[in-house]
Structure formats: C-alpha cells, structure tokens
Length: 125
Image 1 (spheres, rainbow, N blue to C red):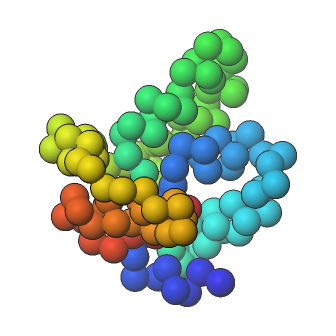
Image 2 (cartoon, helix red, strand yellow; image 1 turned 135 degrees about the horizontal axis):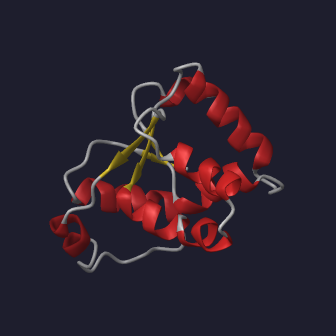
Image 3 (cartoon, rainbow, N blue to C red; image 1 turned 60 degrees about the vertical axis):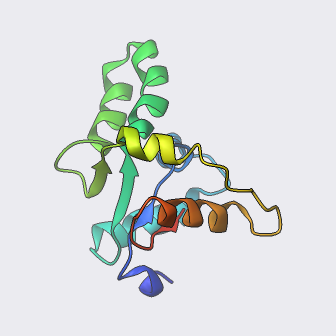
C-alpha cells in the first residue's frame, strides 16, 4: 500500500497526529498502518512547526505528564517525523489567491499550494 509513497514524503496534518495519539478514530487502522510503515522505514513523514502550535495546547492544559509525553515524543528530534520550519515567505505565499476547487478535493489543492511554494512533490495525509 505504501510503495507509491517511497520516493516522496507524506505530510501529516495536525488532525492526523491527534488521531494517532488519541486513537479511537475511524482512521485508527489506517494511521496505525502508516506509522508501521514509517517505523519500517518504508515511507517518510513530514509536518510543519505550525502543527506543534495547533496540537500542543490541549495536552499542556491537561497538566498530565504522561499524556503530554505522548505528544512531545511525536515531535522529538529522535522521532522519524521530520518537523520543518514555516517561514514568513511560506505563510505569505499561502495567502495568494489560489481558487479552491471543490471537484479537486482538498489533497489536490494542498499539493498545488505546496508546489507554488517551491516544494518538491509531497503527499498530503
């Protein structure tokens, strides 16, 4: 299933990371399979530093060290998840008018935005 992603990273949005940690979602089995492929070094996954800002407030607010550790380990430098910085240029370029086309689907639209920013091909998960 993951062979087609071998040569390009898969971008993990914040909700995928939340689902992976919280579990119990309808996507749990797929996410578990993806993370298994990451552990087996079959695919590479990437996210942005913006994801940290989106994901971390809830676990921090719970003040539960075990719960917080689950999230922190996901973003650890030892994690296979590559966390890339979001530059001002990327943020500003995301504001340029690119028409969201419903028949494209969100993944195709996000890939087009990624290419506009000068990034190599990436899969959005």
